Amino acid sequence: MTELASTPRPPRREFRNINAFTDLRTYRLPPAGIVSILHRISGFLMFLLLPFIIWMFDTSISSQISFEKFKAAFNVGLGFVPGFLIKLVALALIWAYLHHFIAGLRHLWMDVSHSAVSKEFGKSSAMVTLFLSILLAVVLGAKLFGLY
Image (tube, rainbow, N blue to C red; front, side, top):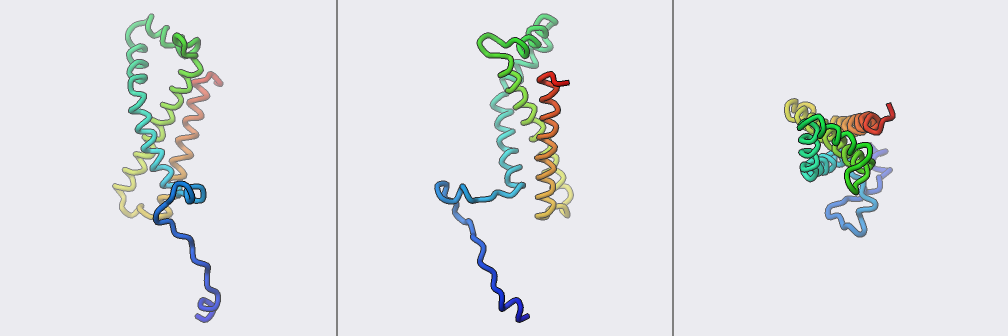
């Protein structure tokens, strides 16, 4: 008991009101917080690019000629927009969908099994969510860009 009293720890710094100019550089967001923010960003990105998604779907299923135009847009480009940029937008959509889906499954699992709600599970499931969404996006991006 005397050992605990003789070696006091320095107090940890508390962040209650984060000042964007002074504290934001040193603030460490936990992985669950990063996944939460990315979940919101991916949902907003999918909503923002909904006209592009509708155009891709409509062009790909309308006719054989429109499907060929759809494929050419990814290779050659579409008007003044190069094909590389269209592939990057499609890759951003792929990542947004994968991350939103995997993070949504994570949240559903935490809602269904209340015993899984702990700091350790939150950190490990957030790391798995980040890893899986990035890995699957890289694999599908490699396919999109013709690496295999």
